[in-house]
Length: 124
Image 1 (cartoon, rainbow, N blue to C red):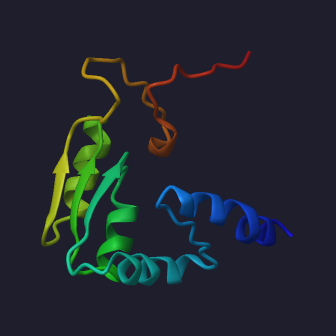
Image 2: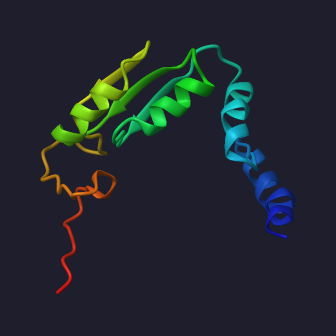
């Protein structure tokens, strides 16, 4: 039902603005869909919040010609990212990306995937 709504109403509306909506069914096929949809040999990918390199490895396995820029603000997690991503055309940056330039406090959690610029919630 939701798919029909998008097909019959949302997609035609987007077409008026030169946009398209593509429905991706399965994650493994996602990479091939991206590659064929964009029709380019070398995708440039920005992996923002790269953590320990899980996504980088996935992208490189599926899109080996891609150029990846990975951003990870945590110094400790960045060190793990460095060790995990010694791959061709992968560039790693120990900085965060945001909508405005500046400096912020980065709150690190014992589980690196839970670290954030949002303050940690501490329950009593």
